[in-house]
Amino acid sequence: MKSRSTRRKAVSAAMPWPSPLGLAVLVWLVGGLVVSGRLVLGIMTLDRWTSEGQAVTCPAWRAALDRLCTGRRPRMVASARLTGPLSWGVLPGTVLLDPASLSDPRTAETVLAHELAHLKRGDWLFLVLSRLALALFWFNPLV
Image (cartoon, rainbow, N blue to C red; front, top):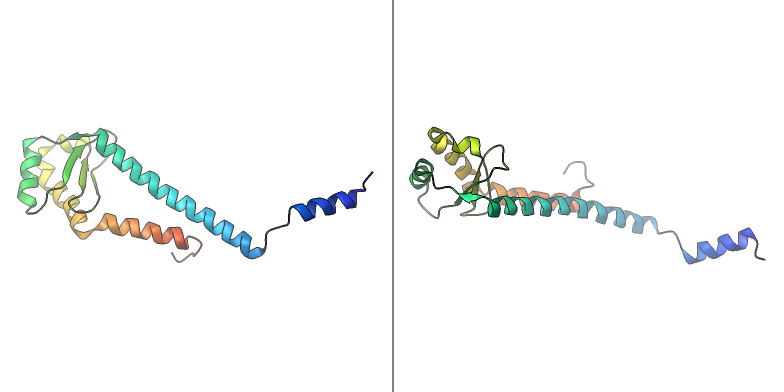
């Protein structure tokens, strides 16, 4: 019969502990995957809200979009899943509107001007790039 110390040595030889560098790389990869996963889930959620939503056909909102957009017009979609308007994507992008915003056509021009400014400045693209940088440098407290 083998002694306990012999069995421990056999287990230790079969399963060596990772080096500190290997462990650090593993922790870094897991953190990067968590941050990247959240980004991917967020994009998938926005895409689902857009595809499940309905195109805005309200004349006041369409007219406001026509007045404010001189170039390519973004999609304008209504989604009951939202609690406020938002924009996402790159030009022309998408403006998602919540039912409460749509119920007041007097706010159409103000709301659309705000969301179109986000699209024109490329805020969503900057957000995605910043999340990708965060996935790489999540361990740095300055990021």
